[in-house]
Length: 72
Image 1: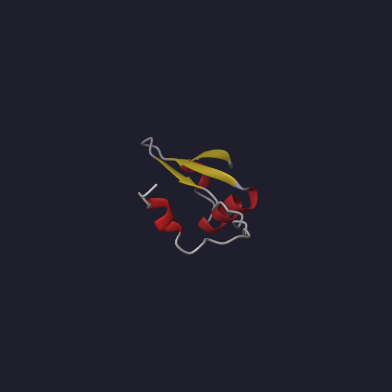
Image 2: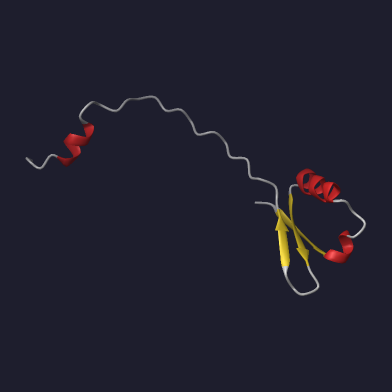
């Protein structure tokens, strides 16, 4: 989970969008920008997921029929 920073729109007036986005990426923080009317915009870095493990094994032929076999 990312930590959060909250800034008012006025605090970002002298910063470029590039600076703001690079800051979000480098600090790994979610940035909430508050507008004067109370609206908010949230910017957060993309969460990088770990790759799923590759498991050994197999699925036998006919597995589906065996599950739904009603003769037993």
